[in-house]
Image (cartoon, rainbow, N blue to C red; front, side, top):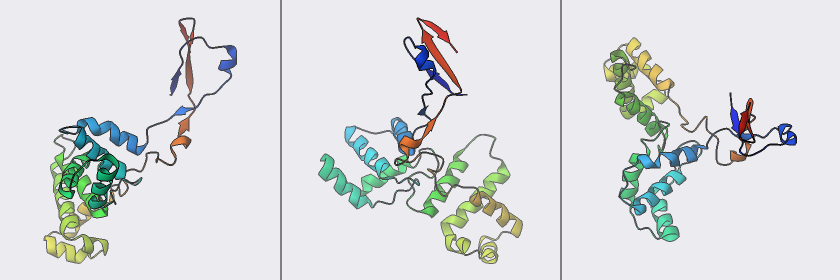
Length: 210
């Protein structure tokens, strides 16, 4: 249940009011909260990282060209950088949650998610699942066109696997998220994302009431 806390004395008139509160952060606010995880050298690199995060669209993709971000940083913030540095910082941003964030196309989005699964070292990922993920990575990395066109016989031959192994690898791919930002409020719908609390905790002369 949701809890709404207030400070100070509340009148009986206030009791009759149902005050909606914000349910969650937007996708971009969630990304900015993770900025502290980046190993950035100074405020200059922070400005570049913020430019990268701000350029990610509401699906979770970075569809802006690095050259355009270089120009924006120079003209709007007087920060000089180049495409190589943008790419280096982008790779750090791509480690953010949710997996797939900052991908430049669907193929890269799927690869980022599969690699994140492989990076897990806990027992939740079995040996068989790791094999499936490795095969799925090969499919997306080397045979993406064959996969999208459903040339499954060709995939089995090229990967030297049987139909069951292919089926398990495709199962891994189909359970990835093609839109990493799904489930978050977009920047345009921010003001619409409210909930009504189930319980209200009020402060009456220093005594809390439910």
